[in-house]
Length: 304
Image 1 (tube, rainbow, N blue to C red):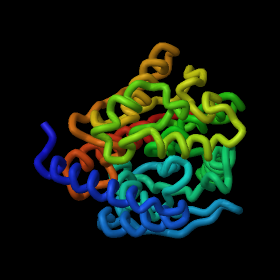
Image 2: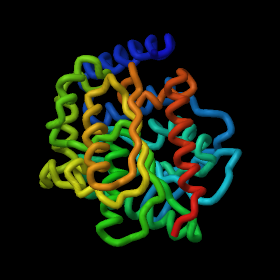
Image 3: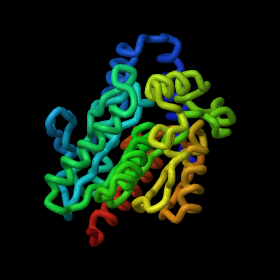
Image 4: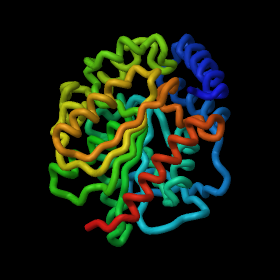
C-alpha cells in the first residue's frame, strides 16, 4: 500500500502541475518555471559534489558521490518530453541515483526541440557516450534516464548496436516514453489519474515538435517499434497512475519476446517519475536505491 506521505504528495503534485498548466506559458517561460519549481521542491542529497563539465560542444555536470566504489560511470538523460527539462530540474534525482550506484553520474544537457528536433538529442547522447567511453580507460558506461530521457537512452542503445559500437553495460529506465504515436491504451485510460499528462495534448505537441519531419513511429523516435534484440540488461520502474504505463509494459513484453534481458517493477499508487521526490517519500527512495544497486551490480561485473 502506498505510504501516507506519498498519497498526500500525489495530490500536491497534481494540484501544482494543474496550476502551472492553466498559466499556458510560452515554452521558454515554462522551462524556467519548471526549473524554479525543481529547486524549491526537489531535495539534493548531502555528500554529492556538483561539477560543471564540458565535452567539446556538449555541456552537462558531474554528480560525484562522496562514497564511490569500482570503475565505470553512468550517463543520465533527463526527461521533459524532449522540449523541456535540464540539469537543474533533474539534478536531485540523478544525484541520489549516483549515491545508490556509488558511481559518478554525468547529467547531460542535450539539445531540446523545437529549436533542435530529432536527431539532435540522440546525436548529443551518442557524442557524450563516446566521450565517456574514451575517458573511462576501458571501464563500463551505463545509461539511465526518465520519461523522454529513458526513451532516449533506449534509442541510444539501439543505435550503438546498429553501428556495431561497444554497448552500455546496463539500462536503468524510469517511466520511459517509448511510443510517441500515443497508440498505447493507457495514454487515454490513465489520463484522469496522471498529474503530468491529464490529456494527450501536451504529449502530442511535444512529439510533433521533437520528431519534426521524421515519422512518429520511426524506431529511434519511438523505440517501442524498434528491433529490441541484443540489448543490455535493463531494469524498468513505472507507476500505476501514469499515462505512460503501457509504454513500459509493451516495451518489456517486446524485449522479452526478442531475447533481451529485462526486469520490470510496477509501483502501486505512483505517478510519472515519482523518483523526483527522493528524500520526501519512501517509494521514491526505494526505487532510486534499487535502480542504483542494479547499475552498481552491472558496472562491477566483468565486461569487454
